[in-house]
Image 1: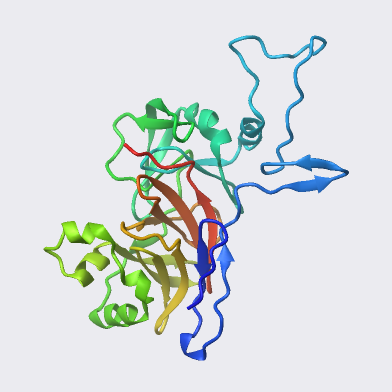
Image 2 (image 1 turned 120 degrees about the horizontal axis):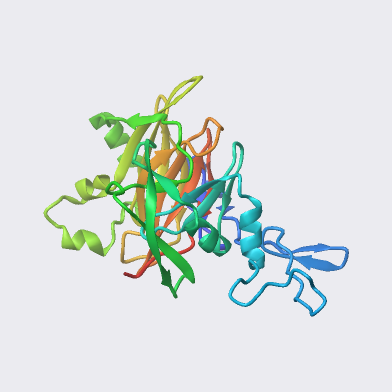
Length: 309
């Protein structure tokens, strides 16, 4: 199976390996796009560099009341969109409207910390709250504010500024389905990294499946079923008559379990579910989202950065 690395991730759809055909690579979108327009340069999601204040500028920011940076201004322009926070640590992840999910980025670190309360999202997309922000800590590695809450529940997968519709429920994996998925997993996706060596009371297979999740997703057209298996790669299947591999997310990093599916949620109004997972870069974690379509996964967003704490 071919893998090319352009950027941080490659998303590989399910194709027949027996056919011997090259596997196309779907790359995670870059965090920035340069666009040349009328000889000028626009950057960072269409954000234009702010003009330097002059003595004649009547609205120049007073000392101690600085104007928002270019990236903060972009975030503030999307005030009406739902704000989504990742976990471990709690930092900006995405901005969501009815039909769009956009990665938030560092420009949302201050605006997101000024929202009065957020709802906690559990493993199956159920929201509770809202919960009041308890405060934040400035973290120099991410140059962002890591937030914390008062009386929030344990182990949420996300925090959101608006409540969500709940569409998911847990699914039992039969022994037959278990065996079929095990057979379809790519060989490098079966690796579990060094953490398994510290938990050797479990068998290798049991340890791998302890970091998997299976769920049913309700839509107007019926019920869809999915299984996501974490480890040195994240592999997602849609369960029809037989498992259908939607994607493999793999950075080819070794020595630690860098992918852990944590839950599923309905973030926008489209019928497809958003799979939420943690990804590791060794010393840190961040939260990421992909949308599960009929035939492939679509990358949506990753949080500002992980904490080494």
